[in-house]
Length: 163
Image (cartoon, rainbow, N blue to C red; front, top):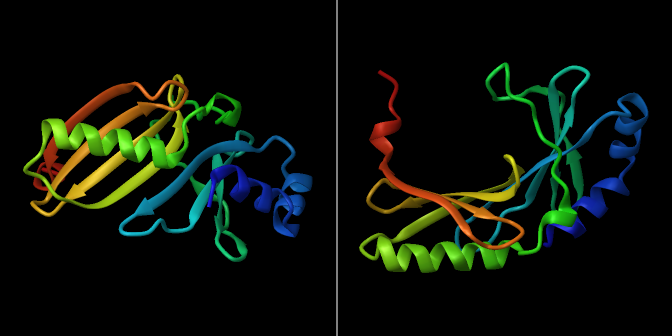
């Protein structure tokens, strides 16, 4: 499902309309999905600056809404608005760009799962985390307007372990 269609489905839902009445300052903050052989449902986050919380809608055949949750961020970080007008490349194109990069730089790696977050971190970008069969993570940030690879890195999953 295209992200724009998922958001249209949310905005047409009773849950969203009630949320907007109660919290008129909410705004689109992120879109999350995972891709294995097929794409999972979109999880779309709306940020409420009044209480520094996020509400996530899962969009599949139906729309379901989570309760308000704390935002995973540094206290001084401001959650930026995700403006879909600045998103010129779709998910499929972003994944194609990541696959070409992996083929070129990490050809020995076989991708098991791709985690995708579309968000605004100084610009709208696709933040992809590719999990490989060898327990590595390849992180790739792609500008959602231009398709330019902004950064990429490969790390072992073991390097994520807290000391």
